[in-house]
Image (cartoon, rainbow, N blue to C red):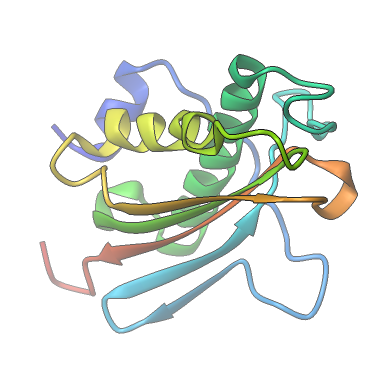
Length: 158
């Protein structure tokens, strides 16, 4: 089943691809690798999730925010590549979680994005290497920011 078909089967609708708001690109392709800049959690109504995990949000809410980061990343990929069917493999995800020093469930939060990618691209191609780190703050007060590296098919390649 194609990635686009799986997305439809899951009933997922992607938000508009977020635009870079500074001196960076949302995605850079180098040969067969696409590097996605850090994406913020955009709710379906276009607003951003805000707050710190462990203070303002519990792990379950933060997982939803991480999933919304993943949906924004999928939108960026589709916008840049024309279709998610060009995604061959998730190679690496880096998730940053805004939380107090005593919070320790960063990996569980980033599972919201990892599980989305697994569901869309399949367990063999959608689960890559991953790091989940805690930070004291993130842009615009969001609870999570996620970046990724994915392998893509180049022109004429399946």
